[in-house]
Every structure is written in structure tokens, then in C-alpha cells.
Length: 285
Image (cartoon, rainbow, N blue to C red; front, side, top):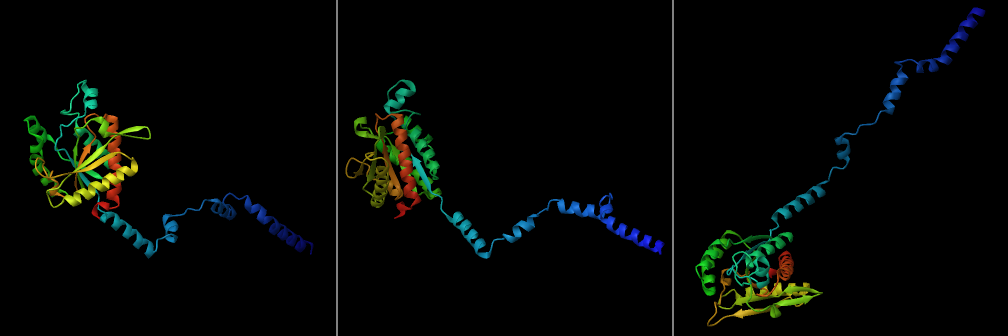
């Protein structure tokens, strides 16, 4: 009897101590279970995106947006210089100490390149018609009136290659600074005038576009523009190559007495005005 009781007592003690003993075993099952619980849970990409998978409507909207971006026409402009040698007295004086209204490098083309840069900032791709041929013709003593006829085929060829939204023939006016300088909020600007030839079918469209640019510039800097000058009749060109395209605008940027700083400010205003017009497609109204 005592022996039986001893066996049962030992068995009960063993069962009571078993959970404690097994924790100290090196390869015990409890140790393995604890490691698995404490390990970080790895979330795979499929787990993350499966629940956030876009629905049919989202996919369709994204495709539509991509299509619209692709189909959206990039606005393009062309700048050229019928009289590319036209220069400004303060600019030539600062460059080499000589006052001149004609210069091979410090001329209207320099500010056309600055306009190109400003238009690029406004997301308008701008080409500049190479002036090598015109420069050579100028060196041979070509007159101002002959220049329009001489540059015409180069403009025609470029227009055939690219569908431009705006084409600018940049000039410098021959009047003095008192007529071509505006002051706004303490800063000086070179005034801008526009010339429209009347002896061709496009002249109303050319004038309308010039008026739009003028209006937008005035909104930015009141007094920065002069006028739109209609030209027709005896003694003038009458076309100025504007018959080649309804979106050709002849711009007179300042006059012989405007400084580089004044011209630069105005170039920025011209670019901003053009960007507003082209982005809203006002030029096509």
C-alpha cells in the first residue's frame, strides 16, 4: 500500500513539474514557438497591392489622362529678323564704347534669343530663323525694303516645315528713347509698337493678333505699348510678309535709345503675354 501511494505521489509531482522542466530544454517545443511569435511578419508586395488594386474606373481615368496629354498640341513659335543688324546705342556703347544703330552681334537678334529663352520658361517651343544669309545680304548693302523680299523664301520654307501658332518678325524702331520708354512702379521698360501691312487678305487677322498681344502686355505693365501702325499705299511695303501666315506679327521692340535692362524687362513681358494668349487659344478665336 505504501509502495502504491509512493508511486502515485511521484507521478503527480512529475506532472506538476513537467511544464517548468520543459522550458529549460535547449530544443524544446516551447522555445521554437516563442521564436516564431517574436519574429517580424514579412509582408510581400502582393499582400500590399492586392487590396489597393485600382478599379476599372480608375484605370479608365488614367488612360484618358495619358491620352489627353499625348494629344495636347505643343505650342510653337517662330522668331526671325528681317533687319537683323538693327542695334541700340546704349547697348553698343556698353559693349565696345562705340555708339551705333547697326551692329553685327549686339543687335535685335540678341534680344530675339532672350525672347526664345523666356518663351521656353512659359513652355512654348520657339525656333529662330538662321540669320547667316540675311547677314551676308546686309553686308552687301541691301536696303530695308529689299530685306522683306530677300527673307521671304526662308520664312516660307520654315512655315511649310512646322505648323506655328505664332510668328514674330522682330525689329528695333528708329525713334528716340523719349518716345519708346515707359516707367512703371519705378522700373523702365522699352515700349513696343506693332506694324500691320494692309495690302493682303490676312491683314485683319494679323491686326487682331497684334491687338491681343498689346492688350495682354498692357494688363501686365500699363503704358508698355505704343500703337498698332497700319501700313499701306505708295512708298511702303504694304505686306511685310504677313500675307504668308495669319499669325505673323511685326514687333518694334523699343527704339535706338533703349538700354539692355529696359529691353530685357520688356522681352519678359512679351513672353508672358504670348503665353497667356496661346495657352487659352485666344489666337484662334
